[in-house]
Image (cartoon, rainbow, N blue to C red):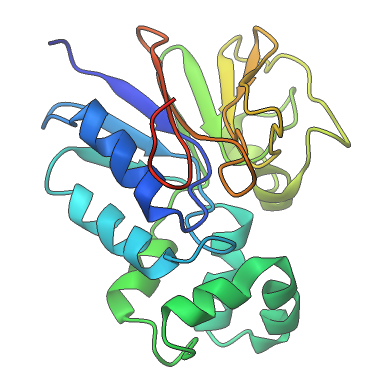
Length: 218
């Protein structure tokens, strides 16, 4: 089997969906799994999702990208408690519950380090991968963090990136459960936290795997 690069959309604390995808994908040591961010919030098992991601690094190459929900949690864990109420409003209450009500004091340092070391983006020969969006004319290294993690495709749809590479993004939930495919951009947040799916996409073969929040494969 050739080495694979597989992108995974917004997990949002749904461990059963994440584990169902891992089981069918069966990552090998030479595979690269790029997770597009939003590991926490909304779903009931954010802590366990982070633990699984940390463990996955022993099976394959993991490239975790930082999402906006992850950024809020990280900032709170780093002492920026003015984010706390906003975070709870956007689904952080389920993450707090997964840490037995103790955030930030109950979050293991290994989890904080994991979030701290998440990347703002990832780039291959054919693709750019970010959590949310991008400015089409700017190299990835020059993109503002708020664009990479917070911009919604519903409010501003970027054009093709200047690199000519295909953009793989999450963040903007496709509530119909289908990948948004514009040719130059593919959004694989297919609304696992709602009635949709957690999506994984093999960037080489275009194979798609999807699991719902209960872990049932599509």
